[in-house]
Image 1 (cartoon, rainbow, N blue to C red):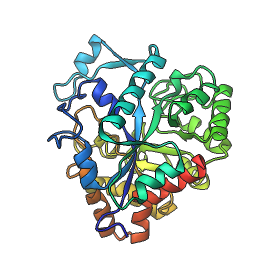
Image 2: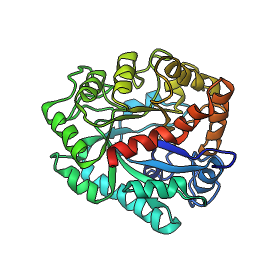
Image 3: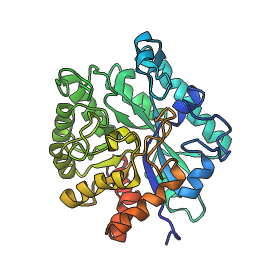
Length: 342
């Protein structure tokens, strides 16, 4: 039905951040150019048959911290981030996505009809679903009404900082979801906005999974039992996620995958197989975090989005059925969109 490759939905890419940071450690050029050394661009989406990208708005502001000069990674300075005037950052990111849409004909996805248009089209179509990574730019749950009118359809409660809505994965004290956060989740459910727990603390994730009336996602993370990292999730969360009919997008960030400097495809497959063997294929998806790697390489053999079909072929070689691979590539994400946006 779809030729030799499956359509793919990627649950997390920091496309606008790439442009705002002048490449973020990658070479910078027109998004229509097939640029060597760049995680993703339009030619690579076409080759990978990537149809829909959850396109992140990261509302943080880069600042300077001299202490971080001592913590350089591969002679690169990774700047400190603060949440200063995050609302203004949201507007800058939105401007980029709408500008890219106008310049290159990318569809800003706002409805199930839009999703079907880019996924089912016999001709190649690319869509952006706008996601806000961290609810720091929201002062009141009603702000979600305004963001929805601007095209936002997905919301991460936290980044790596605590906020008024909940504690993050980097918190020294896991206080979980706050009363205000509970109201925010309920409002998102009512409006049909997806809740993302990718950077949430364990207690925040558990609290949300216990109260949300609609499926939630963990857009870009991996499995703590395979590799113990604060951004990965444990079996209690995976169990609750399965009961919630939610899903986890496996990230391509090497430090989330393996203790090695650079992960392999096989290392990433081990995370998929752990979940598959215990919870089945219905909660599995792909959330690369491309353009969010800040110039660091993805797993060897999965350095850019055009190679995503390599991952699907590797899953087939590990014994997954074609029906399972379709779910991971796009069907599970499509199901979540139907249940939340619908």
